[in-house]
Amino acid sequence: MNKKLFLSLAIVMMSIACFSQKPNSALDYNEKMSWWRDAKFGMFIHWGPYSMYGGVYNGFNQQRGGAEWIMNRCKIPVMEYRAKASTFNPVNWNADEVVKLAKETGMKYMVFTTKHHDGFAMFQSNASNFNMVDYTPFKRDVIDEFVKACRKYDMKFGFYYSQSQDWCNSGGATARKLMHEGWPNPDSVRINEFTAANRGAWDCLQTDNTFDEYFHSVALPQVKELLERYSDVSVIWWDTPMSITDEQASRLQEELAKYPQVITNDRLKRPNFAGDFKTPEGLIPKAEDIVGVDWETCMNIGSSWGFKSWEEKWKSPYELIKNLTSIAARGGNYLLNIGPTPLGDVPGEAKSRLNEMGKWMSEYGESIYGTQRSLIYPAWGECTRKDVGNKTVLYLCVSEWPKDGKLIFDANYKVKKASLLNNNSTLKVDRKNRQITIQVPQQAPNKYVSVIKLELNEKLPVSKLISNTDKYFEIADEQK
Image (tube, rainbow, N blue to C red):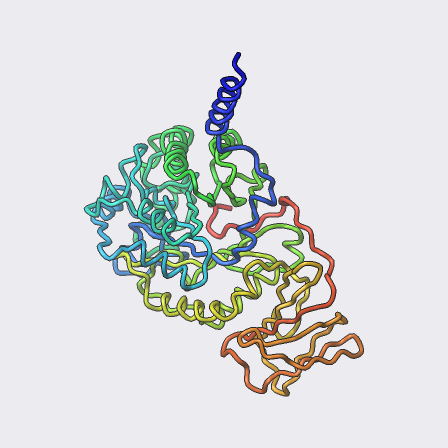
């Protein structure tokens, strides 16, 4: 064969081989987790037809739990809930504005509820017409708009999917909740007896199919639809395993294996499917409970995941920023939830708090992004850590500013420089008796949390991470 022709054919064959390779070659675990570990801060979005109730049914405020659980806790019949969902028309929804808000808040990724426990898909689905496009006058695919906005603003995106619970597609799991958790229904005794006899179901329409039939006709096909349409998805966020079997969980894992970049949480099926990160819900775990593992606290900005019209327990900007520094100092991520209104707006109280967090992050984001757990827990605040070459930098996140102008740090490190992070002004440092004293201004630079950058002349020992452990955190609304 002519040498030139041989080389040309070889190049062509190599090119074909390169382009035909599947994008699912194995990734090193640390490589896969790298962006997530650096991100530290993300937005959770719980939204669906349940927002139209706003936590109120038959004139009564839902007695317990998040407003997204109203169908179950108030035992709303399937056809009644479906009828309400058919009027869902969030004309104010603007994916661009919501993703831009997350970006300006300093968030690096977003996770959207594609299908919550009510069974309503926020995307067009061939597996069930109970979805945003086919069932409502809105006729728009909310998830598609969300993904396009995330790509536009260079935001990593993930999908929450309720793989086991489904209250409107027959056969889905229905966690049993007693009637008093919803509203004072005069027929409560009979309803409680019915749910006890039917594994939590309160409507005969929920029991027409088996869970296996539901899984193979709705859950598995919908997960495949999402992955095939959005192969660049970064996170799949499972919830309340309940009825799912190891075999069914394995089928979902087989689909995920085609997308090796996808990070998953620990809620697919316990204990045999550990996922990539732990999910403490609504709390910041003790340091000893998350030793060596990746973890993420998911938390509401108020008291409910879904929109609650009578919300009064909004967390203050101080509490939210302090939470963020505490979580980062322990090596975790903060997934902060908002619940849009039935019209698609972000509640004003939530937006104002996110704006305050964004201002803080614009000044102090260096102390959060790309940091790792420091294993240092001072009384006046938190301490995050970053290694630069062969030196360690500590970020002292001070929520209790010293009144005497002296910040005491119980440590014996070799300090190169201390400075205020917001303006880089140098601070005087004294080291004596295994204690570092930093002379600080009388007035705290920030009204929430101020940060001092402490550059060391040494590199501290590294806290190594493992892929996961057998420890699990409680899922608040899973059937016990």
